[in-house]
Length: 577
Image (cartoon, rainbow, N blue to C red; front, side, top):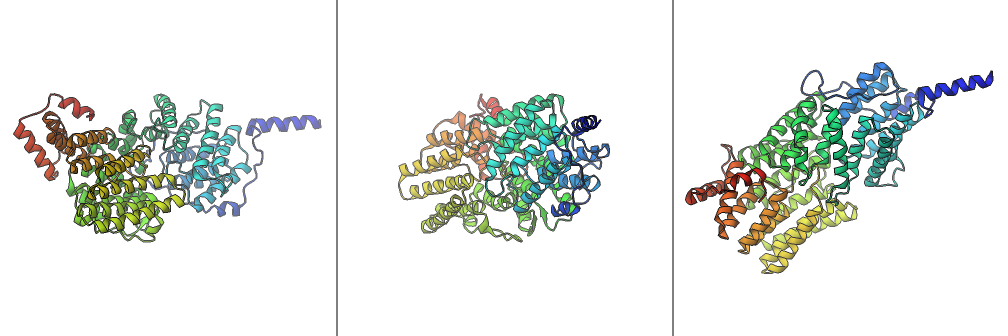
C-alpha cells in the first residue's frame, strides 16, 4: 500500500510539473517585495483596446492568468519593458506561485538589444530567477527559466556579452527541445541577434535568426515578436531590403506600442525612405509623449528622444532644414528625461552635431557645448561626448584654427583612451574612426596628402568592421563621405566620386553624398553621371521646405545641360551608383 501511494505521488508530479519542481509554497512576501517591482495600470497609447498583436503562450498558471500573461508577453515582444514588468507583477500579486511570471520579470530587465541592465535591474532579475526556480513548474517552463538564469548567473564574474552568449546557447537548447513552440523560436532568434558579433560582416547569427523568423511569419503573421525581430535581424545595409515587408507591417500589428511605431524606421533609414521614416517617427514621438504623460514621468521619455534623432536625420537628408531645426529647438527645451541612458545622451549629442555638420555651419559648430540635463554628468558618457568633440574639431579644421584643432584632437584621444580603459571595444572603435578622420584632415592642412589619405582610409576600415549601433540612424558623418570631401579638397574629383559612390552603397540617398557625387562627376567631366546624381537628389528632396543651396545648383546643372540620363530611372530605383 505504501508503494502504491509513492507511485501515485510520482505520477502526479510527472503530470503536473514534469518533475522539474514540486515546491508549490507561496513565496514569502518579503522576497517579492525585495524585487521592488514596477506596479500599476498598464499604460499604452494608441487604440483603447490594447492592440499589441497576437500571442498565445501556454503556462501551468491558472486559466484566469492566461489573458494577462499573453498581454505581458506581447508587451515584452515589443520591448515595452516597463509595462511588461507591470503586467507580470500584476499576475504575481494575484497568483504568487506562477513561476513563469517571475521569468517574465527577469526577461523584462534583460533587454538583449539595448544597454546592459543597470545594477538595480540585474539584481531584480536575479531575484526573480531565484524565486521562479523555487516554484513548481513544468519541464518546458523550467527550460525557459533556466535559459534566462544563464544570463543572470555568476554576478560580477562575467561581462554582458558573455551573458548574452550564455542565454543564446540555452535558448538554442530550448528551441531544439520544443521546435513547435513559436515563442521559444522567436526568443531564440532574439537571443541570436543579441549575441551576434558586431565585427562579423557575414552576419552569420543575424541571418540564422532571420531564417527562423521568416519561416515563422508565414503561420504567425500577427505575432509581435516574430515581425519585430525580423526587423532587428536584418537591420544592416546588406540585409535591410529583406525586412521591408515586416517594416511596413509592424506598426499596424502593434499600434498600441510606441516602439512598434518607431522600429520600422530602422529599415526605412537603411533604404533611404525618408518620407516613411518621418511618418513613422512622428507617430512614435507623439506616442512617447502620450506615454510620459500617462506614466507621470517627470520630464520626457527616452523613446521620444530616440524618435527625434531619427526625425532630424531624415529631415536633413531631404534638405528640410526648417523641420530639422524645429526638432533641435525643441530639444533645447528639454531638461529632464527618463530613464537616463546612453540612448538618450546620444540623441542630445547627435541632433545638434548632425544639423551643424550636414550644413557645414563651422562657426556655429566650433562653439557647440553639451546640453545641460538634470542628473546627467557628461564625463560619464565618453562616446557621446566624443560626438560633440568631433564636431568642434572638424569645425576648427575647416576654419583653419589649427592650434584649436590639435587641442580638440588631444581631448578626443583622451575620450578614446577612457573607453579603452573601460574595455568598451565597440565604442572605442567608434571614437577611433573620428580620431583617424580628424587626423587625416589635420595632415592635409599640413600638406601631407599621402599620410592624410592613409589615415582616412584607416578610419574607413575601422568603420566598415564596426556597424552602426542601434541607438542611431547613422554615423554623424560617414568616414567614406569624409574621404570624398578630402579628395575634393585635394582636387581629385574622379577619386572623390569613387568614395562617394562607396558611401552611397551603405547610405542610400544621403543628401551630401548625392550632391557631392554629382559635383565630383561634374568636375571630372562625367556629365551624364552628374545628372543622374543631381536628379536623384532633387527627387529625394521633394518637399516645399527643401531650400538648401545645393538643390539650386543641382537644378541649374540639369537645366543648363538639358539632360536626364537614360540610366536615371534604374539608378533612382536602386540607389546603386
